Length: 107
View 1 (cartoon, one colour):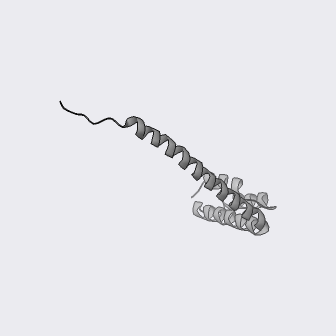
View 2 (spheres, rainbow, N blue to C red; view 1 turned 120 degrees about the vertical axis):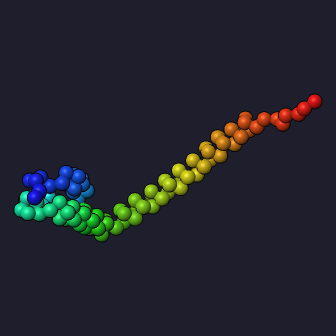
View 3 (tube, one colour; view 1 turned 90 degrees about the horizontal axis):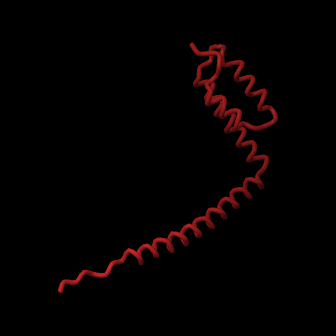
């Protein structure tokens, strides 16, 4: 039915994105149960559930850190938009000035 190894991408994502004190035991349990007539879809579902639950727990445990991260990212995004708009306006305004040709007149 299936190989002895769980799906590589799902296992990689689980190792990288799951957090918490029992992360290693969770990964070990899933890897151990996979060869026992479990499908790849089952492993993927368990990995996604573990990642989402881990992210929710981290956000719940560190509310103010999450709020600070969102505010900091928003501030950087505003600065980036302002600077990028300023630079692009000056670059394209300069191109428009240099690319303007005088009208052709016939004598």
